[in-house]
Image (cartoon, rainbow, N blue to C red; front, side, top):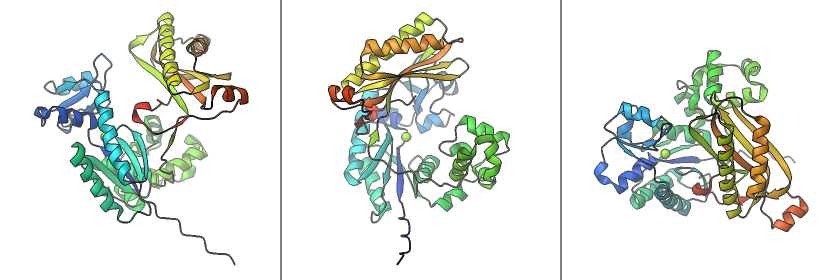
Length: 374
Ligand SMILES: [Mg+2]
């Protein structure tokens, strides 16, 4: 006798995002600055705004904007350099509290995470209590978006922050965000948005209304399906509690574009040395070495080589990185340079090199240890 299929379990996923995180931490230390426009930004000609307080945002200042532009928009704003040690400490306290009250947490950044509350009784009540606890214990405000998927949850918290607390079904999200630009959909970057715009698709609603077949010539079958799915807020991706480190990398953006190959090679050596030191400290070794080069016209190239053994040895990795760099020999000035290690072994050195086993380093999700994806 065939049983009818089980109805799919109803998922309840929340996206938590600490409001104006760096700026909020600075205000906790310097309450006298409360109410003033506050910008946390590095120095140097290419520094960008890492966080702006909501007072500063009223002047049109936003994250990732060049700091120089922010100074023009609001010369009276208080500019502070970022203090990541202190931010990490506050972040750790917030996520420890969250972990204390929910089972499934996937932290995705220093100030962001997803939690899965499927099957939890009264999930919104649990979330309300959690937000209140965090506020009470740390003074930080967490915005919350809730939905049946990560996509809905994240879109909702982003749309309603600060102090957001909004839940939506997939259908409600389709309606609510129909008029929003396609860029609000995670996974739709500037290039995709540009190509969609060329087809007369500017909003999520435009994309919802366009038959998949019409997207295929420009994007291919897989991407066309993905885009249509996202426009309808379909997303089955799970909240993963353990992050699998697939690669570790180290990269730098130059304050000005560099054409001199000797200078670029020196930078590459420094990046490789730091990366190897960090990798050895983690007790892991890799056998795939890659470089990343971004040119002044934003062309980005990666070149990789897989070795026949696992290593975290500075001399070995540097030699491979330099070889890859010399083979590519960028013909234009370079804006950004990076080195990456991938294909890790976390077994004991003898076992790893002996078996050729390509294990992967696994670690708890720690914002201080996030590998920068190349
Ligand atoms: Mg935030």
